[in-house]
Image 1 (tube, rainbow, N blue to C red):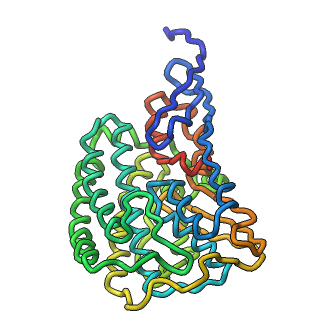
Image 2: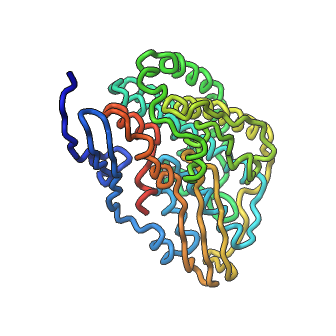
Image 3: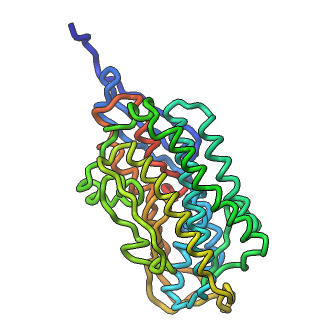
Length: 367
């Protein structure tokens, strides 16, 4: 005979990793089944958008590093892309190639962090995380060669980059590109056909493509639902139109597809970087300009395909040295809005896996 239960509402969280102790879930359970859920974002008190309105255009670059700090290079590029549109600033070709190399390295590093922590959610403790961090360290070493920083890089500037790549960067990059496909093979061999991974992720947290589109979901989560949308192809920026690469998509939009799409994207990023290394021209990496920029009055929106999806910056200029308004479209915030739809009807153990498959970073949610 069935056991009679009564719904109970409990708080899950807040925990720290990438949620900074400000994200929790108010979940109503009937036994172990989730019957209702409310995400509570909390307050990180960063105020990035308002801080940007009090800083010069160049100083804002340091603020973008601290949004999704696992994707700092992509954050830099999203901001300077909007600013270059606003000010009509030309970017040297060599700088565009180095920018693409940097953001694709950042994509690989971000997806490695996702893979390691996603396996943590499945209970693998620390082994897979250390495997993923092993390769990520090599990428951070490359960032350190480029700009002297590893996480909050501040490498890009309106009109280019802070400096060119040093001579020892190129052999280190080539060694990494030579080794990385084998490391991805190793991860796939350990994870993709693992029966525990399959049983915990297949048909769990399914997000239908129509629902994903209606909710403005983007990035690997959208592509995992079978929608082949990537700004690098749909609205090419920098030199992506010259690159030959594929857009991986999933079949069912479940947690497994969200993992496998990111794994395949790492392979495509390696292909893109190799093409950039082969084609990069000589020349300067920055356009000379006034330190205190004064873009003409007007507005501009610039966006990039960041590791978590479409990252956009909307800037309004009143002709001064700071933006009149600065608004950020952060993919982590948008992608989190469908959490309730994906989790209700599942079990408590599914809840942890589904949330982990979204790979949100609260640094860009409460901004």
